[in-house]
Length: 219
Image 1 (cartoon, rainbow, N blue to C red):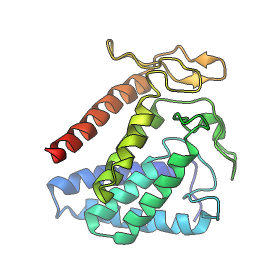
Image 2 (image 1 turned 60 degrees about the vertical axis):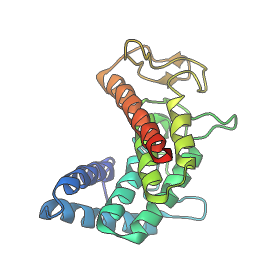
Image 3 (image 1 turned 90 degrees about the vertical axis):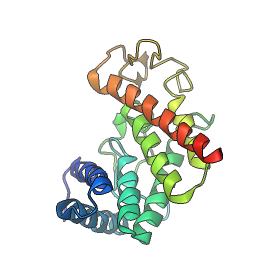
Image 4 (image 1 turned 45 degrees about the horizontal axis):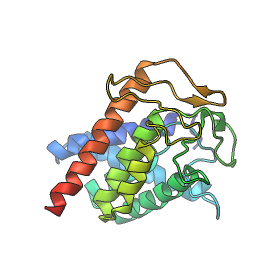
């Protein structure tokens, strides 16, 4: 079965919504069906597209990438599907490594990567939504494994907003809560669109929640 660009991501977003429903209503039939179908879909896509140097669900890297392994991890945890969790962690480890620059800072998959089948990630344009996805996925992985290395990945990604990036520019403003639309080959994209602002604010909330959870466990 061929999937149009973006369709897999949309299904994964539905899975993440279903996971939240199941957290409050474990008997919700439709939510359970979405999670079960999503696990089957993602594992089949991974089997079809995986190569020795390509541990991914699709032959291309696109948009909001970390939502795919996040959905697989969350669905696996919810339904007790061990293989789903295991493959979710493996694919998340792979995509995180694709987003670390040689200098060690976070470099999200650029939108120029779209449509480049089997190619390494392109560096630009870098968009705030990718950071939010990494933090949420790292939180899911932390829940699944207990490995605090995922906190390091989340913090590295979040520091992209404050200037730990390819251009050394501040993208998000913690005082005003505003955020630029990302980084392109010339520097900052000075637009401040709603998606970017929300991605920054939700990233900030997600990293604070993750760090607070870890601090509570240490007490």
